[in-house]
Image (cartoon, rainbow, N blue to C red; front, side, top):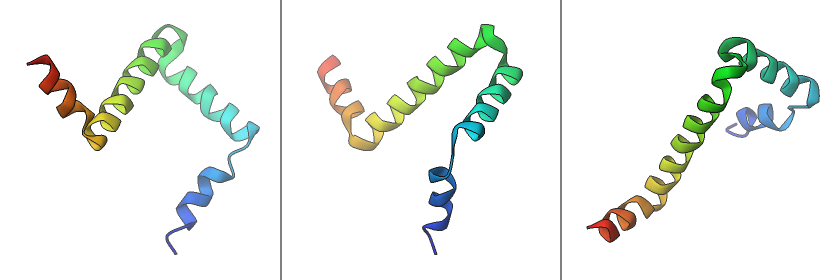
Length: 63
């Protein structure tokens, strides 16, 4: 069924999250991590704005 992939995210515990954080630190290093998280947050925000139509409203206000 379609609900099975969702169950993978529900079963994440502290050990799994610790491994993910450790891998991210190894890949990007502590110096680049804030920049990576900022760009990830900006991407998520842009996606949410585009999905809800807020980006078009903001563009209309700026004109």
